[in-house]
Amino acid sequence: MLNPVMNNTKWEELRLAMDEVIPCPYWKSLATNGYVYGPDCDWLEHFREGGYEHIVHVDILIETPDQRDLVRSALRKIHVPGEETPEGFRVFGYLRDGQSSDYI
Image (cartoon, rainbow, N blue to C red; front, side, top):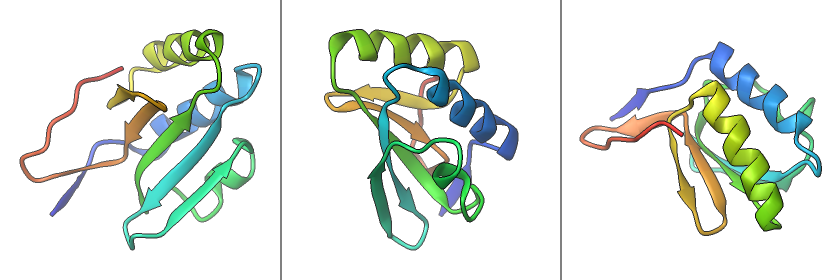
């Protein structure tokens, strides 16, 4: 069973924070139906298409160490559930029963 850990307000905070990072990071998402979207770098329009209810997680893809620092700082300011990964960051929209997450 999937348990929501984000709401529309937090997704909007993420969307706006990532749009302000220069260069803007690419992202890809996993939907509740198993569909993987991306990579895409349009945080303003494409990220919010179809709403947020279907997002299991979003992977934020990092290209440089400086970009990683900028994204990490932005994520810490908005305090979202997720983790740092070799490719960048993963922000969770849902967690499975028994799964836990720290906040970035």
